Length: 612
Ligand code: M6R
Image (tube, rainbow, N blue to C red; front, side, top):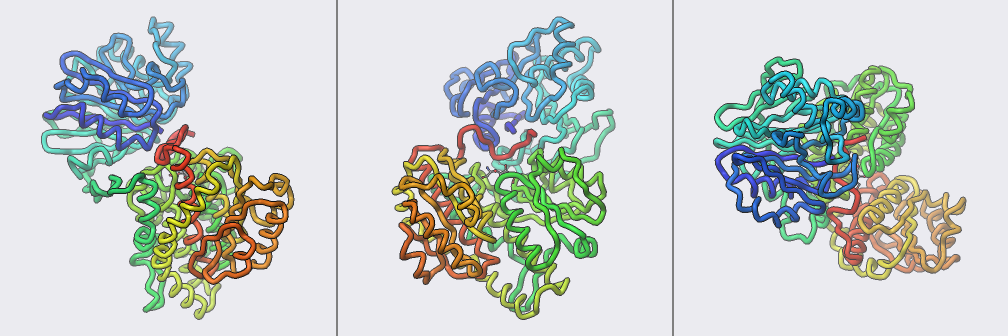
């Protein structure tokens, strides 16, 4: 977690760093800070949002052309002014920003205290900057060498940027398990957690690898060395990211923009991978390892949060269509329980950011054990995308709202395509059914548009239940994970306690919660289990619960007994999550806005969770 940014060039650094931090705020927003070097080293930091930094007049007026900045998601030490980054060395010569966790900071701190260092904050990061200072002074080293030496003593994850009052023409950066990129402009250079703060100035980007240390300077090309001091050849990539993609574009919030983009993002995830007219589905990422994938004994899907919910839907898809056994694992649990994995397993990682630390670690473990690793990722060039053996990008475009929306539906598209491709090749689906399904699949973007047209109706339902303290979400089959996802969306952005359940499980416990104040959101579009869902709705109504039912167009039965209904176009059960997820995203969004919550930056959360 946390976002870091650095600038060195000919322009005033402060506005560039400030704007960059605003773009990185999705990574953490409990405090922020900027250090500027202009003869003196000056640091300005504050608890709260990045905009707090605008209040430092001295920083705003500074002519410094080199600086580093940080937006924080607290791990070690509460969110306050002192724990905010950048942190200084004891001699106030160095300033450092850090994303990640220094696991052995306790031991290092003891050693540094014994050497006479005094600490101001509770953070692990401050230990690192003191360690660099200690090495720099005791060994009389330049900044880059001192950073390399120090990092060899560090256990943990880091992306860092350091500036040195005595070397005002360089920034040193390094990474291990946390992302870091370098931007190459015209007589100016940038360093950042991702390309979003840089893209306004240049699309020439270098993605750093683990254990690499980069030096950017005013008058030379970037130099990259491995931690053991070998010069590294690097590759400059042209990043295909447009400024308007990372701006709100007239919407009140990124989340709303991203919900509304879903007809297009779903289409983008399908593009070139399906052609109903010619009767084929082809997921390019599987091609090189097709044999191993087709003959896998088992798929193990690892993910967190919303991506994990997409994984649960994939279990239904792969098992029903392609008849391949699937296990879906929370990445954090998987890696710590000594799982049985072998070379006949295919481990599929689902991640929007491609940087989620738990998912990344789970993959490293699976790789060690010989499984084939397949990544389904949104962020191009991200850590997960780079360590997988093969995979598919979901092409959803930047997702900035902390609540995942369009990435979820795009993940579902790729997973459905994979299931159909495998089913067809393995002969587990009839040709007729295959053709019917892919024809229907191509209609989904149009049907998504129709769902989005119901926003005003969904908003009016939101106003009826916005004051609830709890909510229950129920679904069956393909729509059970959608119940989980609907509940997650509501709780993370509106802070209403919500639970998702398989509808039939309700009578085994949660039914006790139902009374006249409890909204129960039922996803009732299933063709297969309609009567069963209908009975569940009756059970809720018998206990005076408020039923909000997502039904298929033309529904008559559930409509009669539900308090509110939201109609979505008819489709096969296989595709139903792609449509039923959207009203639940909108419902959560409107409720959160009505409750005055910050939907794009909910409390305590961050977009990409790069700490375990
Ligand atoms: O980037 P990832 O898909 O790996 O992120 C996983 C979760 O952190 C993420 O889905 C999180 O649950 C979202 N806030 C949900 O909206």
